[in-house]
Length: 577
Image 1 (tube, helix red, strand yellow):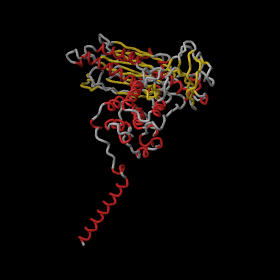
Image 2: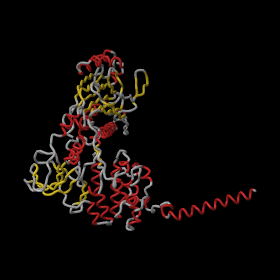
Image 3: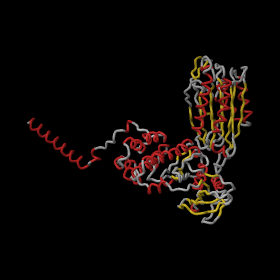
Image 4: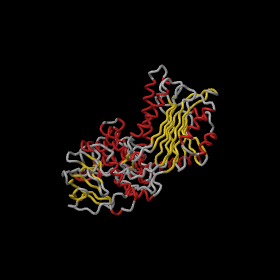
């Protein structure tokens, strides 16, 4: 995401003392990366307070801070902040709990409170467990953003109800707040906020000045006010937010110009064009050969129709960015050029074979083994994308390439949704590139958020088409624009079209094609498992309603039943008279 500005400006301060205690069991830390890491992951501030009753409280708090600041920034940069932090904290909690299990009582082992603030783009992401706190000071008002997970036993003693390492199950408070220039985020341990009121803290923040000096002043005040605990705090002041000016953003996007129109024989940065594979209103695709070693690649170039459209340019840049981060045999590799680029394009591996669309035309009703083999390989590619919180959103036969050995590879990342990138604010409306309606899940047409189950829907459409030579729902998916139209669709089981399809194999496909995403498989691996392992619940044939089987006979029966009911009513009336 190097095209995104990384000009967030932060000023920070810290202070931590043992106070009247012999050992300081608090731990604090701030990490502000630069470059691409600052864009994709943001900055982090962490505070932890080792539980005094625990024998390894100090070790627990230090481990919490070090692990978050190291492991969070090691998670894939395509992941959202929430997934990244939750994965890190879940693993950390299991480790702390396992270490604590060596003590006679687990709650007396590695136990610590923890509060984390991630500052990314224009949002602060907060994660909290225990009784450390995060505040926001804005326009003279100090606002607590977390709540204590503690129960007061007496005037001088509280009992933690939640903490890191306290239980194998971890429940974390997660929230987000918007960022404004001038905001001050204040993180503190209970040794400070239990003895200083919000008014006293606000008074110091209102004075302004050096953040480190303010933190030390607050720590000293807490000590003088009679704090009997370790005392720690941190300040993070927002001086500047990234991508505030559209001109700066556009300048960053257009550092590389669009290449000129290409044709066979022309060279770009040492890559000679052999032939054009595909051209559309949005892009061009060429087979090129490296003039130094003769290796062949595919080169994708942007369409000159969009050379002044920042949303389009950003999406094109993201295509190459996505491809360089997903490493799987069934996802086309994006190749890093061996020489500096002078134009905007990206290279992928050259797959010398047909698209799945072409293959299906030549194999209108493939064998079960072929369908399962191809579907499983596409599923493996999708699983690699989903693990990085990337939705492809345009799975269709034209975007699946088959090698000469019959291996399937997913291509074209132009419609992908990247969770981590979606969190970054831009000064323009992002380009939303929806997939092909014929293969797209209903939620995309209905303008609802996509999920991994949306890609599973598209995969099931292709599996149905390979098995039957037809599209599901009699090919009427592309005609639907409203929910009512989707509800009116009628599913014809694949085994009714192709008798060689086992009844149990149709069941998983039918489940994937449900209107409600929650009713489908949520993981592509679940779909593939049921496609290859007979599930007893799918052994019975799909029973359609009588109206679907024979509408004329259904209405004839209805008329007969109504006549019988009317005759019965007439007889009853005559009997009463």
